[in-house]
Image (cartoon, rainbow, N blue to C red; front, side, top):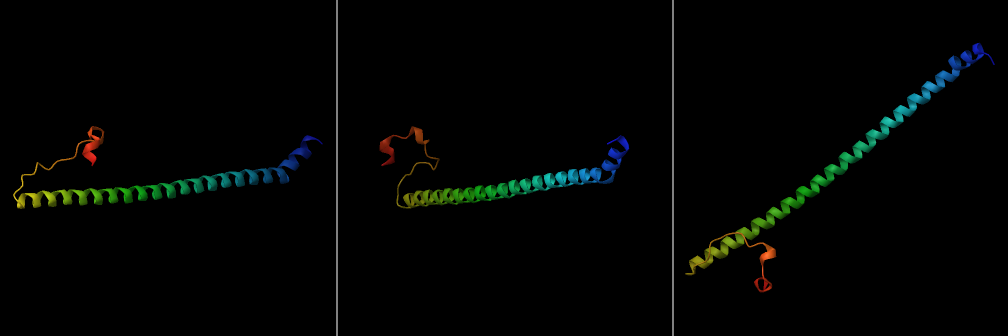
Length: 101
């Protein structure tokens, strides 16, 4: 097989098949990358929504406890007591076991 026959073979069908193969490979790679990006974005959105729901739940619980403390403080004042100032509780690592009972 000489150079003219090789060129005829490559330019005739071999080159076209090679270019088509490369094009298909690049296209498949791009579609795969897009699919992975889409999956990552979907997962990120799901995680963000879960975190937002947990934050809202924690804020509702915090607000309930604040309202409850203020209500008890007000009831103590109405009944002649002298409650201490409303403030945040001490850190858990500074609590004694008897404080929890």
